[in-house]
Length: 237
Image 1 (cartoon, helix red, strand yellow):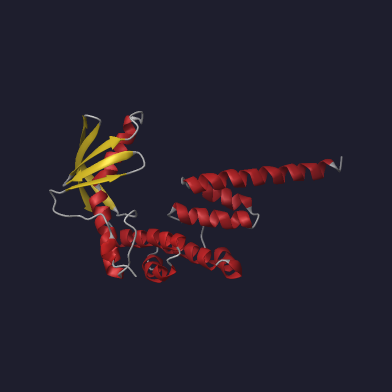
Image 2 (image 1 turned 90 degrees about the vertical axis):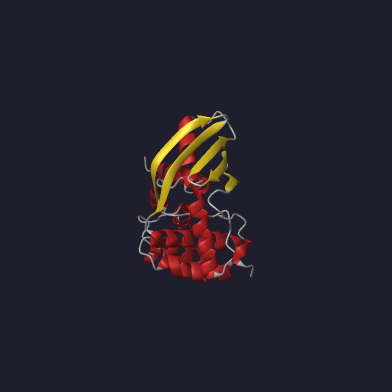
């Protein structure tokens, strides 16, 4: 197992600049300020502001990921970061090629933040086949009431087969899921069972690329099912 120190993004002195990228922006963090530079200048201004506000919490989010990796002694991905936080005293101004902003970020509900971060890492571990990571991560996420249901979905997905089916049907509440990964997994289960309406209801509150693909799939299945039903009824008249 690789040591947790493998995380490549580090939080050093408050004066040190941290440069990183999102799919749409180059971001520079420094102390209580951030600068965002859109990779496509046609992006609307509201997205610049949204990116800058989110960038201000980046050092805290990375720090929480590093702390979790150290606590569990796991080599977690540096691409995952999350914290529950509050932003105050926000200000921004346009600069050449981008937007500069500042504000104070304070962590809120740290236990919820840790449980959610553990859950995010558990989904990553499952996707990467790092099953030895799952137990310590799930222990944290299943212990918190807000993330427990998502953790159960992940456990059902990991088990699969009849055991997974029983967990999905008997223990999961589809109305209280937090993460898109959990919603997609539960929706996929209902689609496999041929029960389209629960999947549609879940996917209506999910905005990931996978959920969009599942929406197309379940809507197509439902249309075909309705056409078959209509054909069957037509034979009676």
